[in-house]
Image 1 (spheres, rainbow, N blue to C red):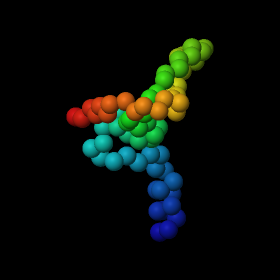
Image 2 (cartoon, one colour):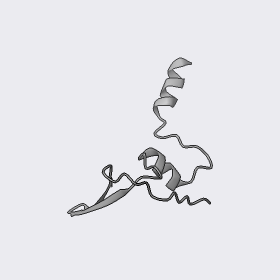
Image 3 (tube, rainbow, N blue to C red):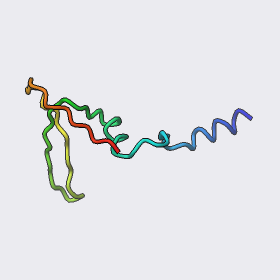
Length: 70
């Protein structure tokens, strides 16, 4: 019985909470927080465009918090 359970657990690729919208899950997974400044760096390559979100830690003044709720 233990081997069957281990095989089933090994087959799980990803777990998600029900009811958490995709964009909120992305913010959580990528540790994107409100009240911080970010810059976007885009680079084209043969595989397509690559975008990178860069935290601007040198900006001390926090922006006004804006939350988008569904």
